[in-house]
Amino acid sequence: MKCVLVLSLVLVCSGCAYEWPDESSAGYICDTGDDCASGFICDSNSSECVPEEAGDTSDGSDTPDPGNCLVGQHEVDGRCYEHNDVEHCFNGSSSVDCTELDVPANSSANCMGVGDELFPAFECGFECIEGYEEEAGECVAK
Image (cartoon, rainbow, N blue to C red):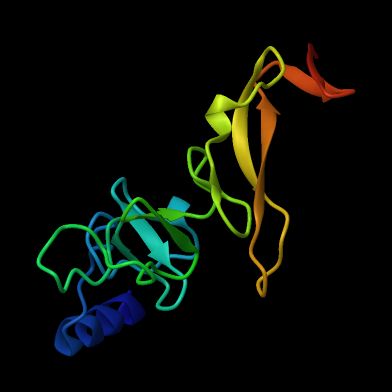
């Protein structure tokens, strides 16, 4: 009990809060975009959640200037998207909408990483829905 009391006093005196940070606010520490709340992405440079539409808007518009997307993002029509966004899958040079491609029955489209840190690239694929597994390019019942 003494240790808890001493630790509590140290935290209170140092200005630390007992509450976890709010994942829906900018500055929340993250490893991946899954750690951030809706509307936020994980900036791989700072490891912090930032608003999805972060970027330099020096022209006064809500549209980021081209080339100012965060690491792990690419620009499409003046907006930044994560490279693995299923509707804007970055293949290394352009963006592909995986949801427009044919996928096997009982599956959904996804965007999978195939590149590396030096050359990030992704390609469209599919993932079998729950209760099904991939077999020879099809999704069959387990």
